[in-house]
Image 1 (cartoon, rainbow, N blue to C red):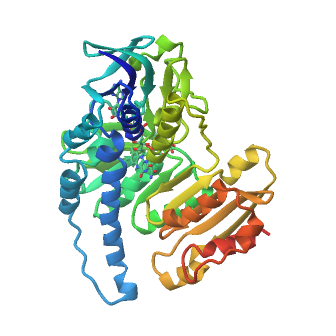
Image 2: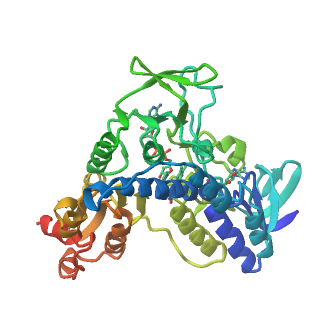
Image 3: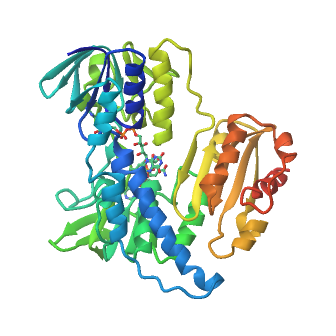
Length: 445
Ligand SMILES: Cc1cc2nc3c(=O)[nH]c(=O)nc-3n(C[C@H](O)[C@H](O)[C@H](O)COP(=O)(O)OP(=O)(O)OC[C@H]3O[C@@H](n4cnc5c(N)ncnc54)[C@H](O)[C@@H]3O)c2cc1C
Ligand SMILES: NC(=O)c1ccc[n+]([C@@H]2O[C@H](COP(=O)([O-])OP(=O)(O)OC[C@H]3O[C@@H](n4cnc5c(N)ncnc54)[C@H](O)[C@@H]3O)[C@@H](O)[C@H]2O)c1
């Protein structure tokens, strides 16, 4: 097969690239080893957010006692499992997505592509020759080298989203977004959860206050959070796991590994373009070029493992392939961890801004002392923190109820370089959660 452009990996960005280039009249081949759409719709964002929606409903029902009388709550995971199977993933079947692709004029090839030379791909014996190649291979769950772990029936995110019941006990290894989101979901459905994080705090990519907030809430919900802890050994006796953490044993029905992600660049064959196959990712320039004739987008670029980043980079790669000038700007990358409270952040953390030698000022305010936070009462924990350099915000965190939605206003401020003096003159609707931004601005001094 000979094409103008071959796209390897149909993650969220790969689908955009293939569809838009075919729409522009190019001959495009799209290769996908597993499911068209990638990790997000089948194993990540969408099913986990359905779990979270359900778990949050349970948590809100349990808050009725403090606000509105009584409610008897009996958790049942089966509607969640059914919704993920039927509504989110079509039982992990991508027929509809493949049809969407082919009806857009893309030639679809199912299989694992390997670059065998510049402009040449091998997909299980099918050879594709392409003038240009775009890589969107995503990542796989990283499995840490823990004694006894290999060969046991541990879960990764790909197994956890297929759960049909909440396990009686669950050990989660990893306190990043994946580990935190799953830990809270299963705890709210009744699992006894132990969360093991090798770092000193949860959500270490975020402001330290965010990790502290989530650790406090998790403790209040009965999650056994072990930070600075090491899993030394894992054993499975056919029924349950024994996980040895800092010398003590925890027995659990299930073990979820959420310890980061990895990509196998050697299997992809990027050495044919002179790239380092032992690297953690593929470095790209501001137009997503990795080498002459090779582009890369998505998690593999290391610019932020988010669906919106994959789609943003897809737009830039498409522009470059069509000869339009457009360059990536990562100043205002937003991100939301959908724990309760949600942790939304944009741009730089205070530590990152200081490390760049900026003249940093910070301002913050607790959500419970805002009008809306006080009215909200139970479940109102959170804060807003702003990081300013001169008269512009270079970063912000919004943690709390609807923290990810409140983030929208802060993302506009960072993206648009709106002067702090102008933000201070803004009218913030009363009594919204986002009105707390004005108190954080006052605190900037
Ligand atoms: C549990 C979990 C929850 C998440 N929640 C969120 C969230 O709420 N919001 C958010 O923005 N992000 C979230 N993410 C991150 C998000 O899933 C990814 O950033 C997103 O899927 C974009 O990834 P991608 O475009 O790099 O490719 P992916 O989605 O990883 O897709 C890459 C595709 O390429 C295929 N592939 C790889 N190599 C080859 C090859 N050689 N040949 C053919 N095909 C190949 C793979 O099979 C895969 O389907 C979450 C991640 C996880 C694990
Ligand atoms: N809501 C969202 O947007 C969302 C949700 C989930 C994931 N994601 C993205 O997916 C990516 C992967 O998330 P993740 O949470 O798997 O990875 P991560 O790298 O963010 O976090 C993994 C954590 O596991 C810990 N860890 C590593 N090895 C360990 C070990 N042996 N024992 C104990 N702890 C260990 C690390 O200290 C780290 O904090 C992230 O980059 C994230 O941006 C996004």
